[in-house]
Amino acid sequence: MKDIINPPDIAIALKYDGQSAPVIAAKGRGDIAQDIIELAIANGIPLDNNPELVTLLSSIPLGDSIPEALYIAVAEVIAFAYLLSDKVPENFNKQAS
Image 1: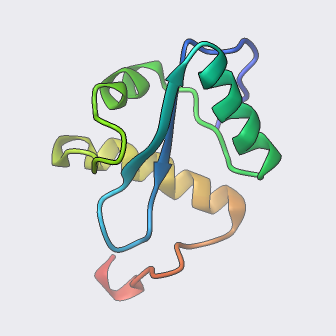
Image 2: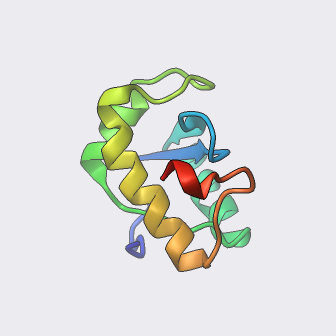
């Protein structure tokens, strides 16, 4: 994932359990976006700088699952994050992949 040099306008955090569609766990603009990013960095959560995807995800209500139309784009981000972290989701079913 790319380093973020300037604080972005919008930040989105996703929650993924390996079984269900990812959920919008946090989102915000301005100072709240910066807080989300700083919290992710402090917890070793990889970041991705994808303005187009963030714009699409920002229209989804907090706590809602992402729509099926965004599965592939979000799956690529999540897969890369897991690759960087050398981890898989806790409930990941390898046979389903």
